Image (cartoon, rainbow, N blue to C red; front, side, top):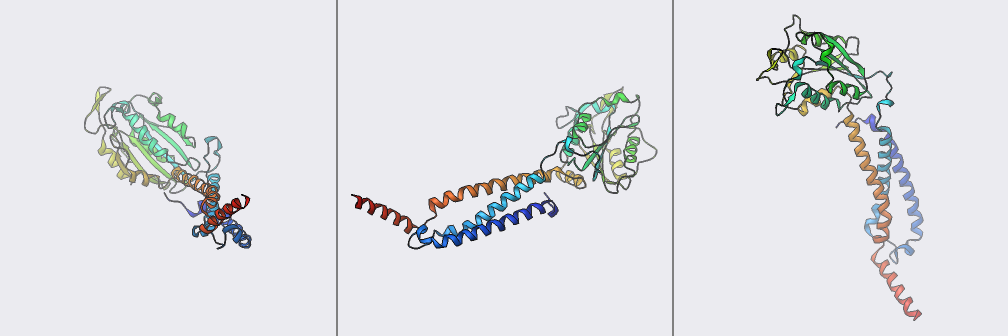
Length: 338
């Protein structure tokens, strides 16, 4: 988790102010207590040694509480309805999605019982759940015999997941051969005019396509490319009177052409380093979520210390001599009364 100073600067300043204010209060409290120290702590006029740390503990607890509360307010979760659709996003995610009939063959997953479409959905969901949709827009370019945009610059993750959840997009196309390169080129053309380095492109396909004459080239807007292969690359399955398998060689060539990386996602999940590298150029919700978790812990610890310190002081704050003196005085007063 990488936290920038800019993100937590308001919380740090508020925590520093709370610590200084609490420290001033503790200083004034000690000045008032010094005049009554013999009454409070007996003949020695001193509490137990650990009590010297109480002012610092209370100031630190107050600072922790304020820091946590400011972070929780600053990074409170937002619903899609709270996101301004007119706000220009800082990053884009473009998905070139194969929706040909071969994507519904069941030869994917660790057990080989998932359809290629379901496997693609699982891989893409693992990536998109990490994104901060307030700063990211997602576009989906579906392709089969041609390419058609399905989602354009959406901030609603639910819309994108609905497209991946078994929507029969193949019926929107004429029957024929899959045009992988045409679909990828259409997805790349969508990024023209976007700021340089603002876009991540993910291509999902089984590679079962006709050879194209011109390989697509990435635009300056594209910062990273990931080509995900689904389907068994070794054992074929029947579809439309022919055998279909993942053509990992053509997908690898596509990744090299686009200066990206290829991953065989048929049975293996995306490695952590691949996901980290892929989402490095995209705003992530993970950092904010972890920061909120830290803030909750700090609020709980700070509130717990402030609540426990008075109880600990009354229980074990005074010196032994002061406590024995109280017991002796109470005993002698009892005998006098007798």
